[in-house]
Image (tube, rainbow, N blue to C red; front, top):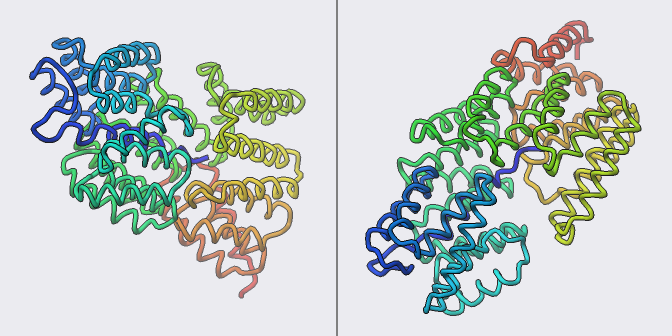
Amino acid sequence: MKRSVMIGLVALALLALALLFLGGPERQFTTRSAEAYDLFEQGYSQLNAFQFAQADSSLRRAVSLDPGFAAAHALIAQIQSRFGDKAGSTVEAAIADSLAARLPNALERAKLQLLLLSYKKPGDQVRDSLLDYVLAEQPTDLMALSAKASVLYQTGKWDECQRVYEQILAIEPNHAPAYNMLGYLAAGRGDYEQAVTHLRKYAFLAPGLANPHDSLGEVLSWKGDYEDAEREFLAALKAQPDFHFSQINLGELYLEQGMITQGEQILESIRTALAGSQQERELDETLIRMYYTHELYDEALRAMAAYQAKYPDAFLDGFYRAIQLAMEQRRPEADAAAAAFFTKARSSDNYAFKNYRDQIDGLEHQLRAMMATRDGDHEKAIDEWQLLLDSSSNLPAHERWWFLWRQGESYLAAGRPGPALENAKRILATNPARIRPLLLLAQSALATGDADLAAQALAKVEPLLARADANLPAQQTYRDLIARIATAPAG
């Protein structure tokens, strides 16, 4: 249930598409105004720094000087799409498309179309044919190679994606976004140290920008280096105070550590700035997930009800409704809501794509496991969590830990502390600072008679809980375990 890093990756893919369009003495795009082209370059630089409002302003000034500047319209469309202005994005994209059709240079037309099609679904034949054409004409074109890498990333072809980014670096060793993406790819393989190395190179090549600090902070948080991650997010915000990615990540970092009040304050402080965007919805999904993880069930129920009222057309609306109804002991209604959600999801055109099908199947296993837990059928919950783990085996450890932890809790509830212990160890091998898995380790160790291991786990969780909110349910769990160890037989 971890929020996907794809928020950042999609933005970076967009920037990579335009990278080096702008370099060199020759203009890569047609405009009748030298000043408009300068503004276009300025807008691109601002976009590369994730200064979206400034980029939008520069690009709009460019099209005011030259209304026929197709590339500027295309980038404006991308910015609007990112922030939920579908109508405005559609208008700008249509203008860019119409203007591109009039350009005499076939290669420029293809590049513009590629930019406009860059976020079509994986397998889009028009986009793929444009890529083939541009790369046939210019095999070392960095824009097309970046677009190809983005497509490979979307389709889960990680090894091929990495090879393309390495090809980009062979052409342009200082291609900063490539190091960023290689960092995320390394993290996706579970090689977090290599990821940090790539991201430090990214930071070296892009000094003064917020995003390198944000990317590095994310990876550090995944491996449990919370204090270092906090420093990186704060450094990103020092470089760019309105860098919402880092504000969200910092808030989530605090929530992860049980610092609920502090995390809520940060996330709520930027809600107005995110209003109407995909990021606002994901902010609320983060809150729901964290409340549930920390057993703050009243808060989770309120957040799910508010989510459904605010985002009635959101993809996860029906999913949350089913969970909410089950938590309210309205099981027949919960079952009906779940059936309606999955029927609708499987009737979507997106169901033709494997990644989407896998996502829907995973959500179904997750919901069944959660329902079984509420029914007290822990063996069924174990089986459903295992089906989810099997189907998500391609995901990195930091995205699967929640499933392992929930399965571990089910093992423990079913009277099987041995497998619960192993699940906790698997999670903590990647991130040794997760509160709930540490408590699971202690509980499982006590149940197997290993009081020493339980004490070690509690010694590790104690400083983490010292930072967490005093009313966090995990605090009482910790105190109960301390009391149990005090009366446990000597090992």
